[in-house]
Image 1 (cartoon, rainbow, N blue to C red):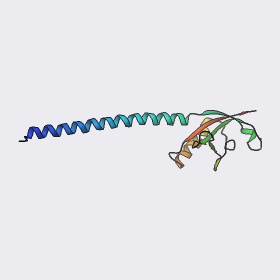
Image 2 (image 1 turned 30 degrees about the vertical axis):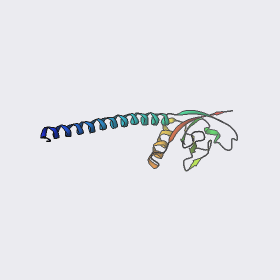
Image 3 (image 1 turned 45 degrees about the vertical axis):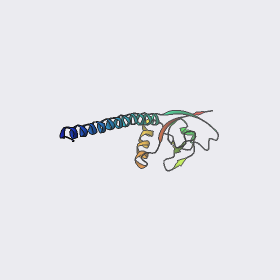
Length: 126
């Protein structure tokens, strides 16, 4: 014969098991949140990538050093924002300060949320 105490004990055990399961899920979510924040920080930190001067006609010679906003779908060959469309490496709009590039980045993040953008410092190597 099952008593009320047995039934309550069984229900309490089920609730404790569910609470433990939820605590494990919460710990996993917090761990993933930490990883996401780390990735966002890494993507938004300007990196310096030297580029070779192949043809000065391809690059605006008055702004060869500065910051460009890149789309990092292919980190080995990121495309650069020109102000109107995405361009190959070296043809993007080069901002003289990281603040200007950050303003452009914010605009692009609103336009394409979730895309892997990054500000990269461009310095020309001759």
